Image (cartoon, rainbow, N blue to C red; front, side):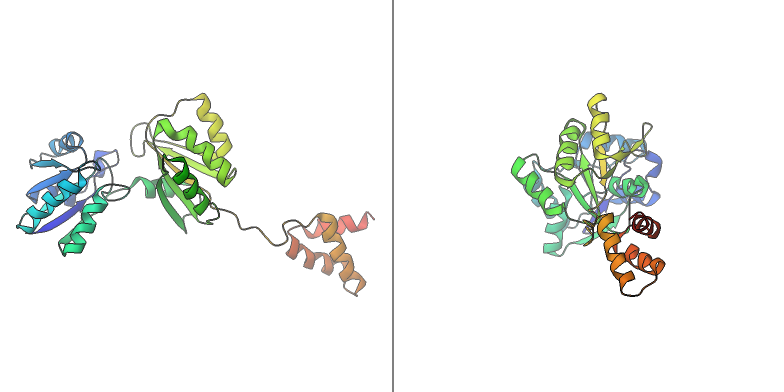
Length: 275
């Protein structure tokens, strides 16, 4: 049966591995894995004995053609990554593209993903979000990426390695401002931890404590700047006084201007009474 199965693996806790995933890996002819040593441990735990071939970013072109040729000759293959869903910030994306171009049938067996798990537990808005993956290590590309997304109002999700975490937090603070952030590490594992606060707070924390484990950074989206954001209380009071001079009751005038400026009705009214 010529099929490529995209099979998600646990992001930490082996109990999250689905019966369907076990069944699928047990039924295919061979398995393409990011790191065969990591995948072998998973397969051994579940008693799955299938040939493994490596497929990663350094051999994806050559190995991708080899995998495709075997599938086109009637074999079935499952692609797995070290943890989570293959093809998400992962070389498997290229294999799926090639299969789509050649009309090869594909089926997906989903699993937990670090990005969605972190978003769910972040405490930030989940209604709209943008998965940004890893920021480039190249300064120019990194800056261009941050410039592109700095005004996005949706929640932003990044992946980051421990040795680059402080550098990334510094760049986020400089380019996005001091927003709310949730740092999620070792999700579903024994040392799972979620830290919430401002970017500046997390930066200070990790300057004192060395980062460990793989991180998902969930960052608050940009707040839309109101047209009246620069209006002072004095200006709001003058706007209310103008309405009063035109015949409106003081309470009604203060209420109307409060809706426009963000100051409370009582703040505007008390400021007028002080004059």
